[in-house]
Length: 389
Image (cartoon, rainbow, N blue to C red; front, side, top):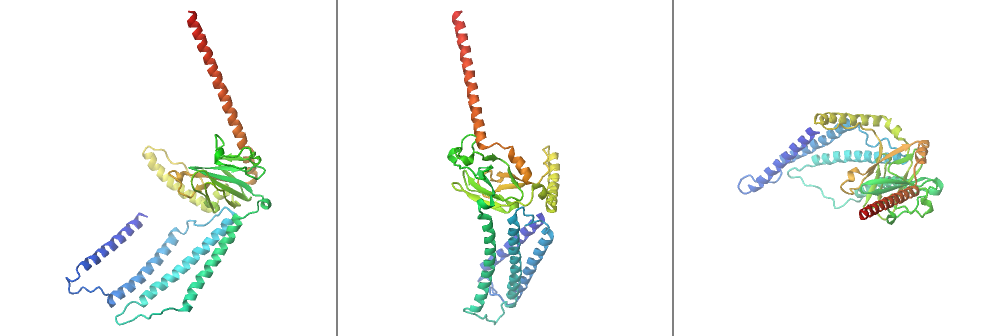
């Protein structure tokens, strides 16, 4: 990487020096006998061959990048049902861009060489050509229409679901600077109403405790979802615009203050299954090799070594929402349906948390009152003793 950067710097410096010589030549106009800036046949031939040279450079660079970095997974191992469709759409788009770019660059540089300037030659000018315009307008329009409709159908399957028929698990993702919280709808599969005006104490999401649908809602700081079941995410933001981004599930949706947005998908791989894939094993090994090398340097400096990396699905914020934006993430655990039910069974509802907090506050207040009363009694006894003496 350092060698590449040095090469780029040298190339840019060469271009800058070349431009400076051109500027110097312009300042000498009128001082030299041969001050013509009109390109001759030699200049045109040089530029024509340089165009071919640049074409070779583009293709050699492309081939090198494919060989050198082609083994890194770009769009692979999607962990949701719709993820495969999205990856396929991306691969189709990338292959089409690659083919079109390869052909058009070849034609561009070939014609730049073939029709380079020659003394005495004149270019043929066409005011218009309806046939050519129809061809180069209709082909991209048809291709783009196919890609757009492909993506639109996939998007509709994600965004528009029938909650009564599909009976998804409804989970709210609540965003605030700079953390996430998850609220589960409980057995009724309906989230209770919520409003920022109700935020108080342990009710950090502003759940309306008087709503009957909120009685079984559960709030956690770690997101667990079951494999093979449709999940419907309802998203809110407390402060600024955030974006709930789950890269391995090919899911992203903005969290907008004052409104509820949604996104749904069906997980197809548990966390342990993703960890056992060949690509992920290789990725984790590469990361830990880098961390081990860095740990040696840290230990030599008297600092703490880095912990080994273990893969986890993550919920990230994909909007720059403030100073700690980079740290706004939450762990996602994809369980088997059985493990998910076990994990969810022991969770305390929001209502229970509020009641427990209220009881603790009341007990604390009572203890404080007793202490104050005891203190007053002691002070009274001391005062009476002093008077008697």
